[in-house]
Image 1 (cartoon, rainbow, N blue to C red):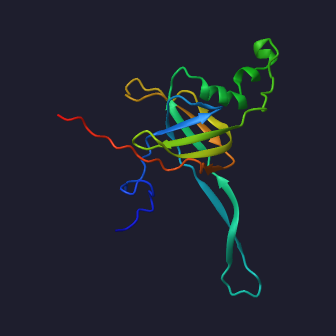
Image 2 (cartoon, rainbow, N blue to C red):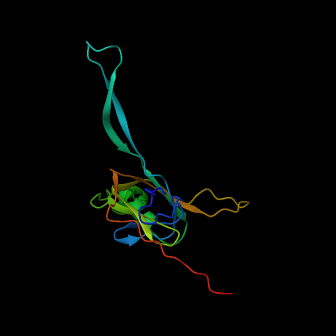
Image 3 (cartoon, rainbow, N blue to C red):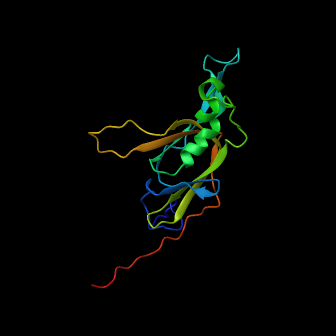
Length: 187
């Protein structure tokens, strides 16, 4: 009998976790209604070099690593979380000139707290947290408040927030849970 190394506690399990149960948290609170999160992706540049006396095959070594932006999507509601964060980087009302509004316009937006660390949690079918990733120094580089509208369509209106980040790491304090066993009631 072979040992299941993919799931040390749930040795009976062979199916990987699914991608439809997750939650996102920032400022210590769960963000309502997030329906899609793009992949966590990192790429490392390849640095090629060759010494003059080496054969004509270059050597390769790792260079600078970059973390891809993360895109969050959710249905349009009255929850202001996406818009409030996006407005920390640029806010229309703070960029209206005195001539347009007659006030103290053309104010700069404070970038004091525009970056946030966020937590992405993944859950198994039983609703137990199985993975978590800490994503560092995120800030919104793109915000879609309202998608294209189509009177002949049958789609949900989706809001989107694109987050630049400076890296992520798996939260190793989240361990594989012992999955519960359910027994159906007798007929």
